[in-house]
Image 1 (cartoon, one colour):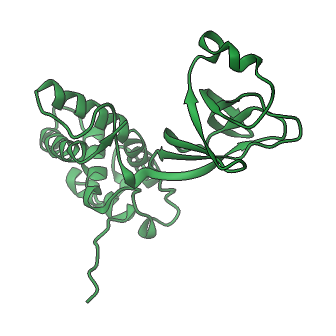
Image 2 (cartoon, one colour):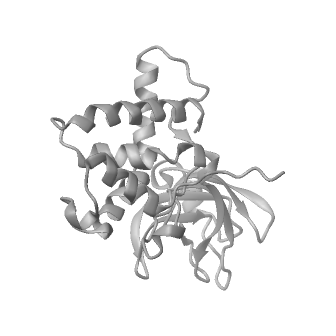
Amino acid sequence: MVIAVQRLTLAQIETAILQIFGYSASTNAPWATAANLYLRINEYLQRLPGRLGQVAAQLRAEGERLPFSGVPRFDMWRTQANLTATSGSATVHFPADYDHYIGFWDSTNSRPVYPIETVGYFHEDLRTQSAGPPEYIELLGFVTNGSTWVRQGLVWPPTASGITPVIQCTYWRLPATMPGTTPTAEYPDIDPKWESIAIYGTVVDLSRPSEPEFSRYQQLEHEMLMEMARSARGV
């Protein structure tokens, strides 16, 4: 027996939102086009990790003990990628969807690489150490790598000339967007049991507080966010 899992397509999410607001099509709604609605749906899903952090903080403030500390994370957004680097450079670039690291591995030398902070203030020994295999990685801010806005990092000790560091990063990523080119075959990047949050959250974002659907869907969104926060793991 095959047990099917029901999933919501982007087209079905759009239809649900239109039905809630009472519009027959996006062209008749205040957002004017389906593309504008897709933008709002994707925007909500991409900031979902931050929203869950707010909910977790609220639950703790109310005295609830969650099964993790810190910011909630989900294995549905857990992945791996090699950090991009150039020969002889200690600078590495993270994937565009990077959210937070889990661990680093030097694939060339088969050993872990450990995250480190403020090398310039507290680790002068690393700044003066001879070039060699990676031992630590210092996470820095965003830069443009090619045409992509990404986080960058520095590998310590410095990289020897002619060597290209190969650092595998296991990390939690940001939810992927749905491009909207084939709405009937695109699905939100989320565990199927939480897919309705794409409807609830987007409706709340698009509603005015005085509108009748606002309070109802704000409550539905909040209840689902609490369920998600209670099932998370943390860092």
